[in-house]
Structures are given as structure tokens and as C-alpha cells.
Length: 291
Image (cartoon, rainbow, N blue to C red):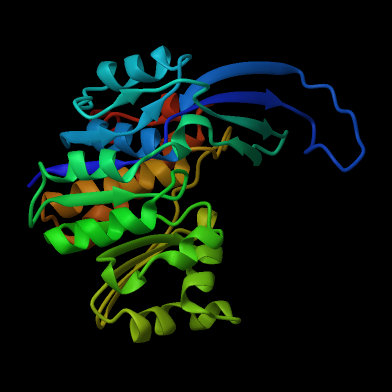
């Protein structure tokens, strides 16, 4: 099985603030740091550090050398990565004194995908291979259609959820990795308690992993439901927690391990990530989980 991640690569500018800036307010930050990030890159790094060989497909701008180096230094296959004219995607991230974050995204090169580029990549993948997608790039709907025709196992983390998600045929998704808000939007649920039953009703053959932040996570597949508590740590920065969980969860699925074990390991990895600053740099290596 080949594992392919078609996703974003961002340069993250992280500002440490007392509180999130309010409308009309000018706020001084106490610190500015730059990190490599983007949901796509974060999840590829998490997969790689969890022990999975992953091919990353993405576009960086003329300022993207640090992003390319981040892939290479983390053992990510860069065969399909391309550099294009203009700026790379970037994010302006506020992290407050309670370690909560607020993120402003600029798509840059992440939204310069073409159908020809996707066709060129997917010709090298076949039935049984796994495709991971998020929503920080364009043409996600086209990628889903083509991947489904080829018989790939499609994993969707629909973040950030917006109008582009409405164009996707969700019945073609094999695994959903969603938070409470995203799950409610996909399921059409007004009541949080209805989310999982509605997901099962609408997508009966899909695996659903519902992440609940400090409340843990819930796995649902057909009639099986498994809950996992979050592991309590001192929280420093929650930026890449979900991406870390995603990478480690999929690594466990690929290795065909028991779900309870996978969920616990994913929770450990996410706990380590939130105890550190930054996005990609906060993601732990597998050998750190034992400590």
C-alpha cells in the first residue's frame, strides 16, 4: 500500500499575545516565531514520524525552500512536490496566554493546483493505496472523483469546513477525521448528540473518528463505538494537535493494529504536541510516546 497526502504547505507566523485581537483593537505581541506548517505538511510529518512512508503532493512558492527542506528532513517523499511562481501559503497564528489559537490563512500556492497536475500524480497510484485530503487546497472535489474511480481508500479531514466542501460527494469517503463542528456540518445535525447516528445513517460504510479536544475522541465504524479520553498535560500550543492525531491514527490503521491501541497512541501523540510550541516542530517521533 502506498500512502499519498495531497495537501497544503504553509509558513506559520506565530504571535504570542495576551488575548485574541478584538475588532478595532491594536494589540502588541510579546513574541514572533516562524515555523513550517499547513495541515497537509503537518499530517505528512505526523505520518512519517509515526513510521509510515508518505508521498506528499503540494505546491510551494518562490519562498518555499524551508518547506521543501522540512519534507526532506522528515523523510517525506518529495517526488511530486512542485515550486511555482508567487508566494507560498502562510498562516498568521495568535496564541494566547491560555494556549488557545486563532488562525488567519493565506492560500498562496496551495490554491494553484491544476487538473493536469492531479492527473499526472494519480496515474502512479492504484486500488488499495490510501489518499489523505484536507481543505486548504483547491480541486479537492476533482481529486476525490478521480481517486474514487481508481479505487483508492480516501481519507478526509474537512478542515477548514467551508463552501468548497459542499461540492464533494461525501459518499466516496472511506474515513472521516472530524471535529464536532465539521461532523455536525457534514451530518446536518443541530444537536451534537445526533452527529454520530446521522453520520452512520448517511455514510454507513465509512469509518468516523470524532475528535473532541480535551474531551478525547470517539471511533465509530458500523455498530462499533470506542471512546478514548484525552491525556492531561500542560497545554502550551494546540495548533497541530488534530494533525498529529490524524497521522498517528492512520499509521495504526495501516499497520492493522487494534483500534483501542491506535486511539490511545494517537491521544499520547496529540498530548505531546500540545505541550510544545509550533505546528510541525511540535509533532513527536514514535519513540517519544513510550516516555
